[in-house]
Image (cartoon, rainbow, N blue to C red; front, top):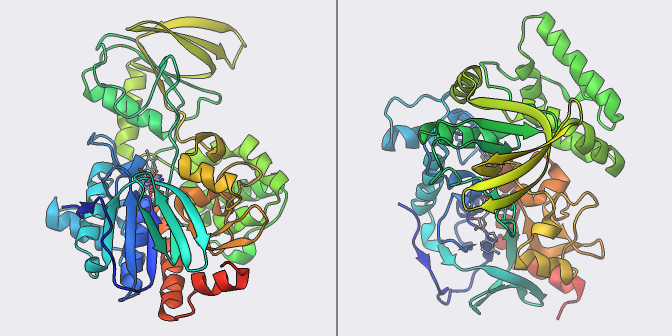
Amino acid sequence: MSPDFVSLVPRQASGWRVVVVGGGASGVLMALHLLRESDSQRVILIERTGVTGCGVAYGTRDPAHLLNTRVSNMAAFGDDPDHFLRWLRATTDPEACPFSFVSRALYGRYLAETLANAPGRERLTCLRAEAVSIVRGASGVTVQCADGQSLLADSVVLATGHKLPRPDAGAALSQPWGASDDIDPDGDILLVGTGLTMVDQVLSLLDSGHRGRIEAVSRRGLLPQPHADAAPASIAVEEVPFGAPMSRLLRWLRDRVAQEQACGVDWRSVVDGLRPHVQALWQALDPGARARFLRHAVTRWEVHRHRMPPASADRLNRAMQSGRLVIRRAAFVGAERVSGTEVLARIRSRDDGSEEIRNFRRVIDCRGIRRDPGEHAGPMVHDLLASGQARLDPLRLGIEVDADCRVIRADGLPHAGLFAIGPVSRAAFWEITAVPDIRAQVAILSRSMAKAGQSSHGAGRASAEKEGVS
Ligand SMILES: Cc1cc2nc3c(=O)[nH]c(=O)nc-3n(C[C@H](O)[C@H](O)[C@H](O)COP(=O)(O)OP(=O)(O)OC[C@H]3O[C@@H](n4cnc5c(N)ncnc54)[C@H](O)[C@@H]3O)c2cc1C
């Protein structure tokens, strides 16, 4: 059961009103925490698809697409770590285990059902609409929707999430989700990228009865590491060299891993033990150091930090051993569709620089989520940027926000009633894409909004007065 959507927001009784734009995992987590933190706040969740909890990550219907996080880490509430496990046991599998990796589709259902049954849901309205602009005025923030509706709120939270690659004009590159539908079972496939999206594609292809060869290319040819049983190491804040040059930071990390390994501890313990410090580490880096991290270290960090479930790793290994799957260190130069069933792809080897042009039945873009929100933004983010109500960070990772998730305007001041969470706020926090990080972020934000709502001089109105908006 999902919450019912309306296409028009009914007139609401007065009360503190928060509008959340985007009903993927971040928006649903935000709405859940807002309902829990206050018993008077009204919440409007705007989602253009009319589906809650799914977004890019949990919208897949393929049961082979597993969470890459254990059940025990995926509860909607950090202070109730068994919440997801109890839901799984009550609805799906009475034997569900906290350490297992279940399908992402199930997780989307969990979020939607949790929202539909949330205490206080009578204060929630789910609106099927696309938000296209945001205007700050004396009495609050107005969200304008594509269908002409406008909603006045005390605070607005952007949870608009990931941007997928745009389909290219000639459609030589297929989009990842749903790309293995109608595929020639004997045709060769090229996957561009070797990360977790590539893992999804290989599993879908294997399950669809595809028998051809699958080739996956990326600049470094690195695969996500598999999970293993390893408890996070305890890393004290004093140990971490915050603000150190990137080379020293990496040396420290390698030494820390070596120390643990000398005592028989797995490297994963150090990576997971570092996780509580990653946002502070990122914030201590100057823009140059952040850029160096993105250029030289991000791929290695990601394959160790965002790991794949052991069952997926086993299937990939078997496919590689049998020759069905080949992983190559190579650059994808481009692709051209030559007929309805053939795509020519140009690939340059990273080993000897040689270039080849090859014929594939399909070339699938598995390079993951796009980072540049300027280039891949929808109308609302375009409008925010154009009107100076928001700005991008210098590395174009996302919309700039301060430590309290307030969107930074073009003039450098925080916007009084506009906040951003989840991947949209990546520039400030970096590790803010996985559910455990997002739920911690929304817990803090919803608490401060509940406090603001309790006072008739809440944050949005008070700041509007301070800003002199009339
Ligand atoms: C393939 C994949 C697998 C992942 N697996 C895991 C995992 O196993 N464990 C884990 O912890 N994390 C995982 N993550 C990370 C993760 O949970 C995501 O970062 C998270 O789902 C982000 O959700 P979101 O709601 O911010 O963004 P999105 O999923 O992108 O959702 C944004 C929503 O906003 C809507 N929207 C956007 N603009 C507007 C607008 N203007 N008006 C109305 N609606 C709008 C969109 O329709 C969409 O539904 C995964 C991520 C991906 C991509």
